[in-house]
Length: 612
Image 1 (cartoon, rainbow, N blue to C red):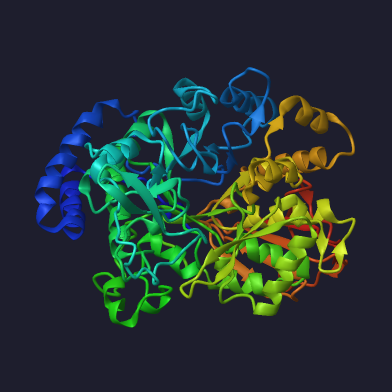
Image 2 (cartoon, rainbow, N blue to C red):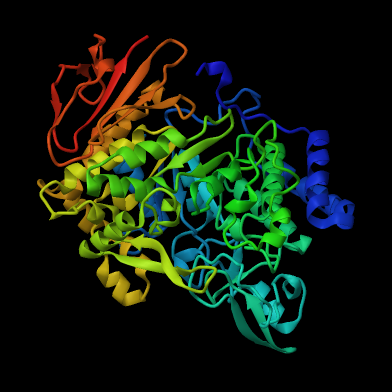
């Protein structure tokens, strides 16, 4: 891909923004459009002078091969009385200087449950972590990713107190529902009750709660809620955030009788937020968090409207409403800049525990060519579990069951959700990624570190921006004590390191933590210098036997191309590729001409480059 066609940050002028916002608000609020638009323009004018200066060059790139992110909680690292956010900053400077272009600090606000995703105060930093000056210092060192937790709020929030007392503004911020309403079509990510009884001065009311009884959903049909969150988004940009992660965005809008997931109104809200950031802070990136099957996930680029049949649980008579205005593809993407590759972790887990890459290769071949302004965030582990909904349509039931059973054998758990028939079905695997790499279907074996590193090499080679969870860098084991202490399965992968203990493991010879950390740090340093890893560089799967996965990145405008070769088995595999017959391959990981090999050791990876 030539440099001229790579993704650029383009500002949206006043007239263009006003026209787009009017259209979005008309779809959302009908006759109230002009009133809400006036309030929105007033809100933006109040924030305009406070936003940090951005590169005025209209051709500024949105991303490059140097982009790679770290994911972690504000208190993933602890060191005595030092504010944990300051501990994180010190660790990055001491151990990972220039390794990451940005850091995703998971919700750092005062919270009541779900390790931060039940927010009490959106404009405050949890004092147990630090303060806004700590957040701004992290932003000064690179791109800061901040969660906008906009689907729901904590029961301990002031908005909810307002609701209970019947006071503004919170009185109208939530969704009351008659408990006899038929909500069987609603797609659920949990098995908890959808409606929560709440005693108020007006008697018991039932409120919508998609995720838990402590996380009460907000009513975006009330424009006051939308304007409130646009103000919060702008406040985060003022504190230095460059990437806004829209948490649980797929469930935002609720209409009884529909699945209440991916509704046209939800996509319209994302389009409006995109217009706001393009107008107020060009270069800001929107990232949607939608742990759903692949085609549904891709819809958040705004390139396609979901076909009616893709929406789980939607009654036939209501399907016309789900498809939006029509099924035509818009000329340009108008929603998120980035979406997570949610199918990647479970497919990669299947690949490395079964020793066959054909399923993963088939999924990679299915990925569409993306236009400038759209890319992926690639990951293997995150603060959540390994979602299995994205496996729908890719793994047969016996393979799926074998994977779940193996993860149980390796010390993991499986969280459930409720489907449209009221049945509990698997939703995610809860296990650390390092423990998930303990062995194959034959059981645990001596290849855990090599298998783990192969998974990371493969992820790092893919088109998009890689994001590494802190606990992948440190080869963290299952935190079963955390599960027992909290009663939450996700705690297995949310260990809090005391830095003296972590430093000892990093500095001691022959520990998996040291071996993994140093290997990944070196690979990340190599990756960020290679132009073939630009997120916009083309990706192609090279046909091979199922024991190998080979990707080509490029060729670039100058002819440079890269082959990423991976042995996904615990046996040496022959390396017979026609592409390798061309002389002149350079081994990036060895920083030397490639000494042609006839076979590849178990779980070994090669990054080979042919200059143009």
